[in-house]
Length: 265
View (cartoon, rainbow, N blue to C red):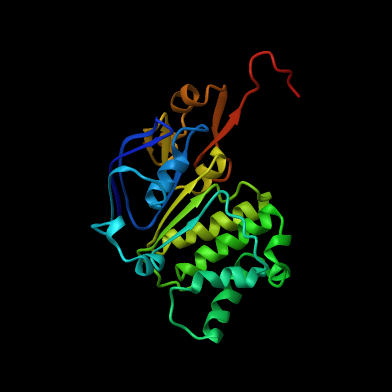
């Protein structure tokens, strides 16, 4: 369980998070939504303990900043929005970096890496240097590294925390679903996944719970059907929209409208 109490963050003298409090349970895929500058990535960075903040963050009842870093590395993994690598590792070696906190043989490590390469369809990239990967390919490799770090290949793995900052921003449609499906399965095992997304419809398809942020505060919190409503979204996104149920799933789908005066296709 992750608890945040009165999290407040200032950057360059501006308040970016304003006394945010929340509790995140195991077994949930939580999506952070909101406009640019709403505080989504800042909230994720605070939970990563990457930036100064006031307030308190507890992980299973213990203050996050008091936990042993090596132990925490087996319990929390982070996929950052901008995290290029300038060394000549290949993709398999990058994924294997996630196994650093574990005491295991090279053979055991290779088994885990191979499982994750197959899971994310990275076979053709396994021996390619990461400096030669496209943005989307690198994003998938880094996601696989997060899975390796948290033992996600083991169906009995529980009580871990995965933090994903725009994990699908560079991915095509197929790989968006492959990555989010893997993250969702990991949450279903009894883990906590927190992802920053911009695509409202992907959030609706995969989230158990959505936190809608605006001006550093949580404006709406609940399942997709409660948060993804026209009266909730339009004041924040300042864009006309229509919301209908997905024909195959009982979840809301959002159709945005051109700005006033824009020509229709």
